[in-house]
Image 1 (tube, helix red, strand yellow):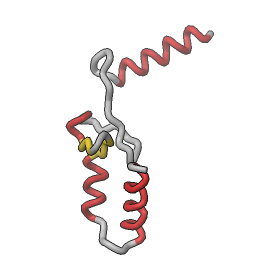
Image 2: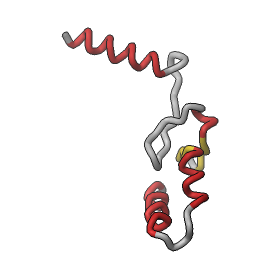
Image 3: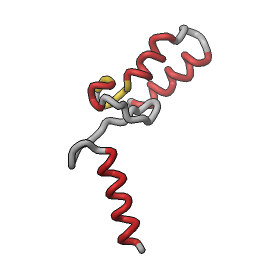
Image 4: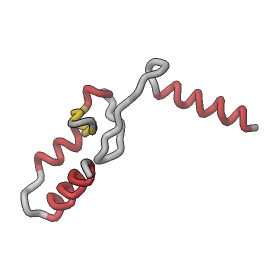
Length: 79
């Protein structure tokens, strides 16, 4: 029944949250929630970027296709 589905969804949600009402950040580049929560990234002008994406950005070489793709993704965050 729908009530059972709602209860199952609530229990799955509860297992993923340490405390009731906890809000976890989601990276705007990779759409993942870091294990460390807010400590797992940076909040820049209201947009959260995880440390994993930050590490990828730091390794990119200017002028490469990957660099251009990431640059466009970052630009879209503030459009």
